[in-house]
Image 1 (cartoon, helix red, strand yellow):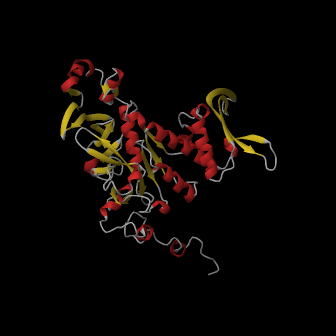
Image 2 (cartoon, one colour):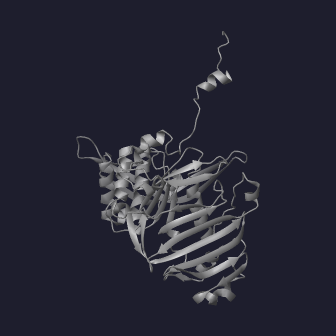
Image 3 (tube, one colour):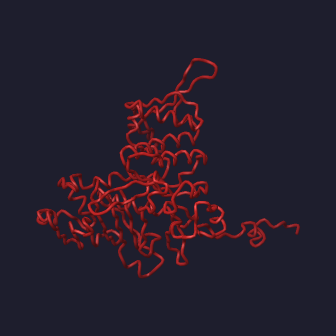
Amino acid sequence: MLKYIKVKNFLSFKDETEINFESSNYWWKKDNVFDIISSWKKNTIEKSMVIYGANASWKSNILRIIIVIKNFVTWNPFFLTPFLLDEESRKNPSFFEINFFIDEKEYIYNFEQFWWIVVSENLFEKKWNKTITLFIRKKQIIKFENDFKKFSNQLEDKVKENISVLWVLDQFNWKLNNKPVLYFFNKINSLWSWFDWMKTVGLLKLNESEEYKDFVIEFLRCADINICDIKIEETVWEIIDFNMNKKEVKFSQWNGLDIKFWHKINWTDKIEYFPLWNESQWTQKLFWILWIMIITINEEWILFFDEIENNLHPHIIKNLFNLIHSDLWKKYQFIFTTHSLELMNLKEFKKEQIWITEKTEISSTKFYTLYDFEDLRSENDIQKLYNLWSLWGIPITRDFTSLVKEMKLWENPKN
């Protein structure tokens, strides 16, 4: 599980910024958090986080950060863009650090990358309030410590200038707390768009598990969707590609899933399957995200989700968070960006679960939480304070209608 993420000099993040998932006051809303007992202390971690901010405040860059980190260690590195609105920043590498747990053990991993080239990479284990070095890297010079010294002579020629040491170690079946070295990073997922929802993994398990299927069907019924059953089959889609210039037609095949909802015909005993695309757009989205949320909880994953409120009714969103904040023994994490003020409620969330992004005067991103406002109480009208700029994080706009008079675009020629 994630404890914190740090980033510096990447996209809108000029200065070092920390996004922390630790929680305070365990007794308050205890179903919103879970405990991890490491070798030296008890860590209380949030199950969910909602991130607010104005359009163009780059709140979605938090998702890009985690994608960069995951892709770097799983051998799909990005060409990184530093903070471009500062001459000095252009000359320096981007920095990323992630503090995470594998079971009861705590690790810190960081790396620096300048555009395409890896400048440094380090892995540490925290034990009894001490930081133990597992390996350190300066460009192509790698030094392994403790039990990992045996790798020193084997890997240096295999670690390329844009490849992570962790990925190379994974090819040698190196273990981290008796798990594959990339075990933690493969538990991280992100959803940005409709295409991402369609890539939802393990959907065939709905056919294999009656418990999963019954839960999804009952949840959709609770969302006022008239559904009796779900049918999912593997299929092969034929794609036609017509080249206008060459006047050629090419056929290709794509392995996919045929998903149908089973509805009962009114006032009859008849039932009929309808393809998923025949359902409303919000029904389709709810189905996709509900399933990935169930998998995230059951497999104890970490899910980053951009703008969860799109096409979903506020009552449905509240129900989804009731599921997340259920009294479950599982350890999982959900990080959402959102504009939904209905979620900004201290009766449902702890103060440190609500984050706000702010665009600074130099057009960089600044993060803070409601926990930074000491005077806030659960009985406060947070939505009202937010709209009054008391918490910032909203766009400072002019009245758009004033442009009509200023620009004279639609000026009546008779005047």
